[in-house]
Image (tube, rainbow, N blue to C red; front, side, top):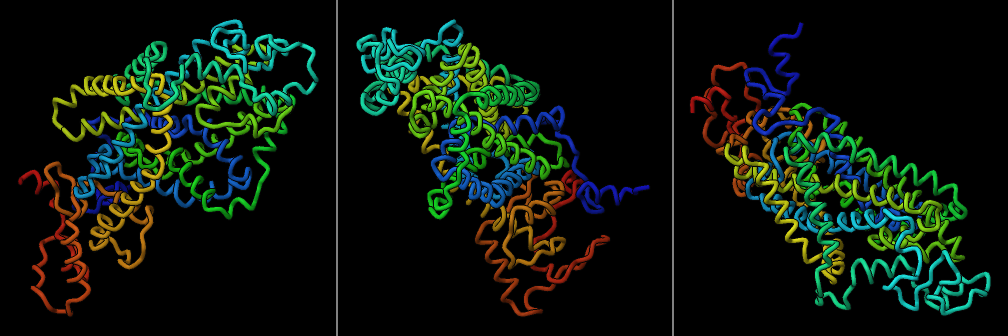
Length: 579
């Protein structure tokens, strides 16, 4: 039979200290742990897994790129993922509230909010374009299959009907290697590219020439924001139910497209182009940089979403297990999506008689030009197009849910009063409306220029900077403060890793950790000057100098040697109540 003291130790608290409730009745928790795992998988597995990773892989050495990619996953991705989950679950606060542990680093939380805001604005524009293509696929013949449309130019060269390759200006009796000649001599423009540039976007000639707002895209943007708001109308209680579909169905579609792709002629060539290693590439620094940036971008580290989602966990949830499962699932999905993409691109390259590199692309060029054109070559092409764009919509929504919830939770936790907790739905509505208004310029004729600009710079090197500062703040400022406390016996001189810091001390309730609690009851780390003075006094004063230690109180806890250099213990729950 386990006694009360042993039970307290099992819950992460020491004897004579109150234990923390496993649930947060004020903020709420996930309905069950499956909802958190599926939400995190939907957050991590996004559009970048489909349109970014396969391109980076073949550009950076094919199968050789897997080596730096998985090295970065093991030594950077999983530790950072685990640290953020532990951080949010420990404090039960969003990306702003968690920095009560060290208020001078609260700017890191604001940086996370800025990144999430940028990404949330343009990410929903990508979803709205996927909505537009999804609706356009509800027809017998895909509108980007032929060159006989009003928006097509004389340079348009379709792959389905040789007699219409240049709007009928060329005879049908052309050589058998017609596609090869058109791609190399006539600079063929595909009907899918002209549909994308001249009809969907009506692309302007300059980033400063906004032109008109594309009303069809604006309407789809409104639809996408309404869907996101409705799914988050009750916070994690409602989004946790939606992810049962949005996080799992993309795998069904990927599997269907994979089975269809590998049965096509030329699929093996495309897959080999994707996997064939070029080992000399791994000696280039750029390859390792691309691997690191893809890990940061794909896992969602430093976006604030991981901290936010974990803050709704029960306090003693096994977040280490969750971090390993989610990280490996995300990276496995990226590799799997590469097979799906390059099997279809290999078929398209075989049909055109060109090398795979001529049809491979990334970003919007892959999702809205190259892959849709490849789908026109399949029987019942509208069906495959519907499935593909529906998958893109679900992948985007899974990430967008967490981006919006990150901003809403940060605002609600920062204000923190009872009124805003009850009006959280209105905060969600306000953030959604603001996101819609800020996304309107991206639906103009120059919007794609700004979208690519934000995509290239909003979530790239800034994520590395935020992650580095966060690691320093947690491990060497807040963690250094914890290391001076007697129960933590780790040597001060040894460098820390996220597991060293987060595993022992964060198993205790926040109100029981050493430090000076702020108004909200969370302990805060001392200022940097106080910390340096404490270190100097502990390491440079001769033994016996300084004021004598205070007499021990009537407690079963003994004072360890050198405890006079440690900060006083935090008040117990009873003492806090009396204060």
